[in-house]
Image (cartoon, rainbow, N blue to C red; front, top):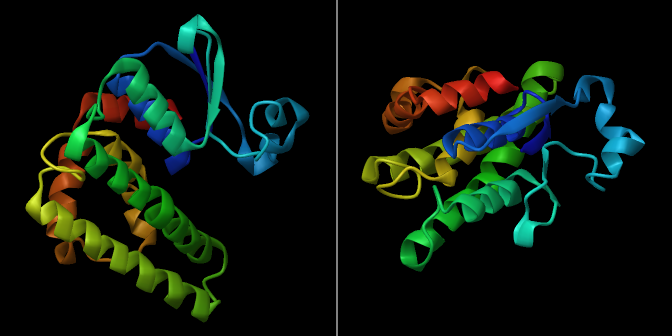
Length: 204
């Protein structure tokens, strides 16, 4: 059994989706970040960076328990554990890795800032303009990639798709028209129709 500590954020839902897709048994402990529960001593013992998500796998490498934090690292760990949703080697492995890092280094931080300004600081015109511009640029990169490929990293569904999907699911905060990103729209509908994705989104 894997213990997932998370909340209903894009980063938390990446992991619940992956666990569903990989058919791994898991339990959920909700860490209410609206009440600063991520700053408790108990949670600090799991993640020194006080961020969700975290997993604890009692059946880790060599049969020993392991705690893993950072959503990208968790996705890679689960892919390694199951041999699923991540190519094992070669060009496909590195394509998947680079698009996972595209989400971790671009979509996550920039969309996160966009969400903040849209929800809490709409009157801060500079911030809204700055993060809207970068959010739209990242959508353009993603749309161009999906114009050439069925999925984010190529022809196969992978942890790169899982990483990106929950962020796109908050598109209403991104000030962008679906008609301007038809390939993202096609991909979003296809991924969102997967039963494991639906279950993972609902788990947190």
